Image (cartoon, rainbow, N blue to C red):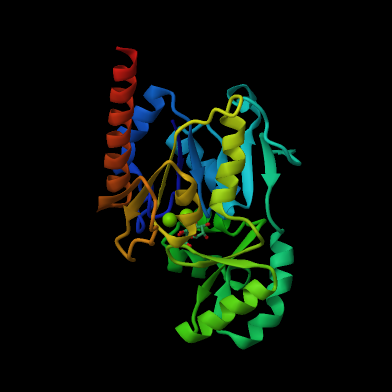
Length: 278
Ligand code: 2M8
Ligand code: MG
Ligand code: MG
């Protein structure tokens, strides 16, 4: 078993970013030695801080799948390093899967005059704190982006549909998070998950994958998982994932829902394993 999880609104409370209600399941994952991968819209700077707080030692996927960071001292846990250019940075082997933020900003430039929205590139730290409830240090880290541009949409829904068409015509894509729209340069959480999974499969034998998320930007990851868990959001309707053969929707929101779902899956998994061994 291997677990991929979103953070904001999923493992972290949408409003106060606390993971306290999930502590029991986090301890159970560690106890079982199961790899758990943070797969988030957040930046590497934000995730470095969170890894320390969570005591998480496995790889992380940053900026909605646009970057994959494997700790340098983690090589031995992977069967093989998946293909692709990796470069070393801050103690991680880093894989970039999409366009750079500079390229994205350049492609967006001509659209700016036609729609009302504010991107992180044009926001002050104070505004970002106000919009997200992040402390100043957290907002500074959220702004250290390399492969994606979140925007706050301030125009009509109709204008939004036209905007999405134009963004896609530029070769970019749009993912909706809990608060922002993320403009992406060809990456998503599902593709990054797939790439990393290849490193864990021995001779093509894969692990059973579990993914947890709360928003539209999690769908590509949830679709690829053997067990998909939609964590209920206190602020928006659950994203639609029709036809998934093994889908759960949590009763509780955020980290409380995460906690119960992970414990339930772990209990079942260890029961099945015990059954196999008898
Ligand atoms: C942004 O991401 C969330 C993900 O759902 C959103 O779109 O609402 C990102 O900027 C991330 O870096 C930041 O930590 C988060 C804070 O709420 O917002
Ligand atoms: Mg989320
Ligand atoms: Mg997220």
